[in-house]
Length: 131
Image (cartoon, rainbow, N blue to C red; front, side, top):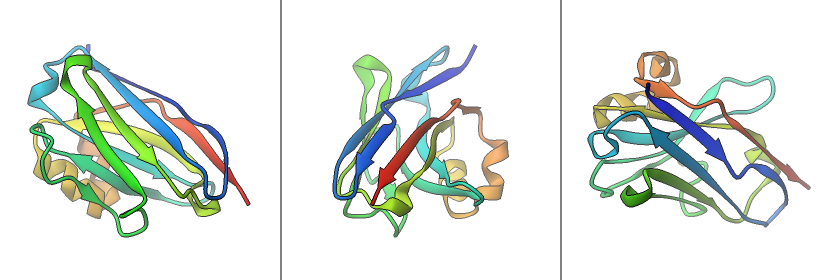
């Protein structure tokens, strides 16, 4: 069974940092691209960042580029999202998602309504940034 489990969410102050983890199981990690999405209260889903299987050329949304870093540890089947210089508008439930095709994941980043077709989703972890 394909499973993604997020952790690392919590409360941070403006300007602070958090690191989210997405632990994958039930599939060959190297065969999949992994990405992070978020959904703020009362808002739609937003693509945040995604990474290729090789760990090269990650994608970042404009709202997080320069502040967030996505990385993967293939030995641990885990993808991380390091979030620095957090802002109140980063408050959201963060989800990780996986797909065999990076192009599908990237398309969902740009057009979040396509996210429902991705191969797997985690249950989400809440990040709250206080002002």
